[in-house]
Image (cartoon, rainbow, N blue to C red):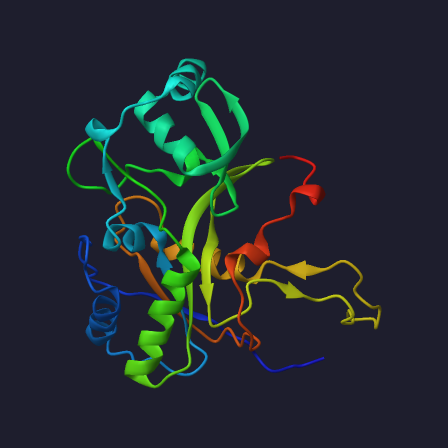
Length: 256
């Protein structure tokens, strides 16, 4: 048993501005590091919220430009939701998981299960007629940010694109990884030993989600204004993961 202390330092970068389409997120992140006097080191990880990635990618939709189809109109009646938003949900989804009054849970085109396909209006300037969609390819967004940070700073780092999701049997949202680069997303612990030498048989760790949730403690979901979080001390194993590694296959999903 290792008696050495283990620590993890989590820092929310201050002064991140409201992101606009086309903004250079990497430079904005580096400016955030300068403000707190930090420099990136090998083994550091960054968690960047999906909201600012989507904004920088121009994933903003004016609802006045959306014409709902027949299915959207029917679903909007069933769920008491804006039919224009429902139309966007359908466009961003592979299928419907659950629906009821006030609830529309779908399988997103990226593979995860979420309410309203992750479409959101919170912290989006410009009035109630604008909504924000998920990034087109969060794994690719994470890879681009990761590669540019490593190129500029010389440090080998990891990047997680995070979002907040609810859970079927527990109240409250938690941070989850929808994009991963520079680290494994899922750790298979089977074959390792417990404290008494017993071999683990079924243990797998949703590492990307754990990292996203740790950062979520600081980034929050309201008016905190802390969309970029730096983590030092994770000591994650080498390897390249992707968010899709975390999504339970349909044949193993008893609740979808």
